[in-house]
Length: 301
Image (cartoon, rainbow, N blue to C red):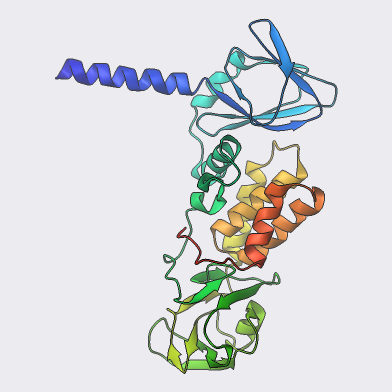
């Protein structure tokens, strides 16, 4: 049995080492070529490279690659031999960046419509699980929202009669006083409006009612998370220190903020990334996700 265990352990380590020999081209600015076994071809984003590859970069070009364990590396040298940097792939990747680069790896390796391309599948969100609301589809998951001051609207689609809907703001998750009741005349409400009627509280709960009955579970809304926000931005700055692409920096910050339910602030970062590269479909998707209403109930994150 001990022999079988040792063989299994050896094989596991062997395949892990083999897997770490692979690199994924993640970013490419300018032109570059890759040479393997004396054969050269243009380098392209999404290409898988072995550690025997030799990269040659044109002047002012830069390349970003991911190790198989989601560690990013960036090069601007005229010539890079991947076998000289492969040992750097062994180091442990901090979890805050691993989730993002796992998403990037799978996104580049799957068809655009594949489930693996949904960035929200890789987010370890803080807060309760998505409870859902029968008959109502939201533009964002309303369960937990952290809000500072970035403009943010919560939109929804419903088959319920619009004049039967109201919104209650509560001081507690269950029971407790009702701080305000708002009539619903449109299919959206700004988070700033919810804050206005929260009577100066740092956190409240809110819910949509149908015929004065709670139709949805109460959702948590926090207004005083500046320290958490600043920590996220600090960590994002550290994580993107080697990035050569300003749009990608903003996109990663948006990912971090959305992961922590700062939807308004995340939308600002995603929008800045899209403004820098208006034709980038990857950058457009989260902007659409946070502003448009899905036809079906959002999947669990």
